[in-house]
Image 1 (cartoon, one colour):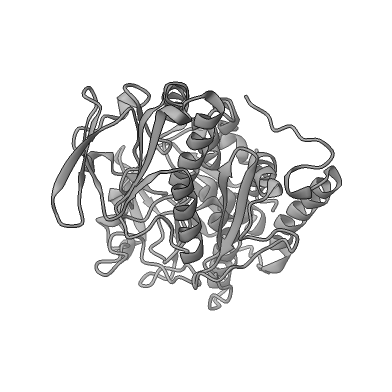
Image 2: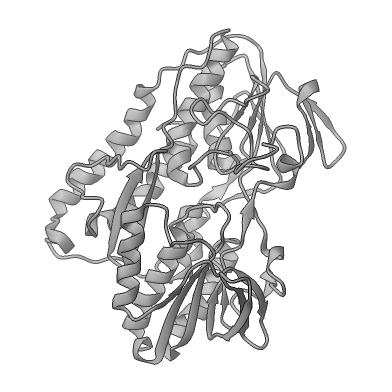
Length: 446
């Protein structure tokens, strides 16, 4: 593992004292969310089913266990290890070892002896009219209230010739799939950073988990090229299927300018269509509807993403419009539009923003508060503003802490961090402070 080291003054003039003050501010901020959204408990013996055991599902279960001592809380999910998804970019670029994103099993974050049970299976069908669901092992599970927190589905199959088992081979990389594939990607990126060659980074047109991750991978690989001697022997390229590289116009321009400074080729409206792994060739579509093929030494694949099949083919999904297939929730209350006993949290929601761990952090208390209001016979009152944030890494030791809402207004938490400037402290937030706060969030404590 490569650790950050600093003198008394870090980059941008931050001292160790600044770091400690910032760390205190970070935890004060996270803890403050608990107090900011009031939630009334209830002794009613209700049954709440939570589908998904990622950050949203685990966090909500722990909060509800405290608020509903007589409630029955059931989590349904098959995956046992918990992944710290925000750390995968650091694994894939050699900053962290894989072990740092494997903090334990999902069950290890649930309190012993409390009213939470875990069903290790997957949901095969939702039947919201009956307030029940079916599991893949043939069980029918009824509920009084349902929280859908299934996460997102990676559609690697949409790329002809893509084989996730070969990530890490022949220059093929992808940070998204899993900790194992992030680690395998680092092997290929390390070789590329030493040898140089033609490196291509991609961005699909669909909503994706952590829209900043493709840019982090690009910037960190660029930094590794400069560190390891491959920069003068390499050519970096960024091919986006959209009309830009990021949704905030000013940051989009910042990235394009930085790419230009490093003589990177950028192509827009250029989706990845196919890959020939053995020949190390990638085929892209053009804005004119034609196709072209390029050779690569390194290819970073960001797959198109969508809601899991069980959601998008259910009555819980939006049927039309820009969010078709995603969970049909009100963007502010996060309550389902047709079924008031159903709430959604995390990547699965069909909302304008909200596919980051930061969004989960801020929306979990809102879901819990509004769910408890409904249980108590009241209307949901807590409102989510679409908050998301991403420490957008520009190089090892430097990042930009960009926080914004549904309207894409900047909503900075720390007055001493300019979100439009690169900062050593924003890097420290990403590399050292966010994971401990995340783990406390899982426990329902912040």
